[in-house]
Amino acid sequence: MIKKITSLSIPEAETYIDNSEIKNFLKKFTKLDSKKGLALREKLNDLNFIKLNEKHISKLINFLPEEKEDISIILPDSNFDENETNTILSTIKEHK
Image (cartoon, rainbow, N blue to C red; front, side, top):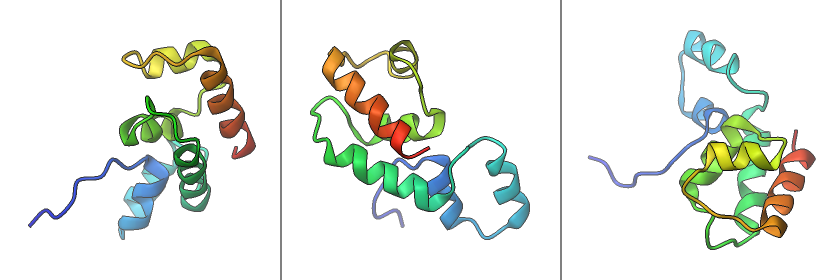
């Protein structure tokens, strides 16, 4: 029975996987370990941006954008202003 549906990033998903082959495969696609991924999610949640939801945060953790244009490509459905974008980018830089 499904109790709750939550969007997870790749580093966060590693904590729920027991198979070492799958974990090694997932590590090829991310630069963060599970602890850093969770810490980054907490920091992004703490920003309290109305436009930034759980799915957006997972995508940001997966792709770790470095420029404003990257955010608009990763999250085309959200319109962050320049201040919000800069704050998101600086938060991501701190956790790389």
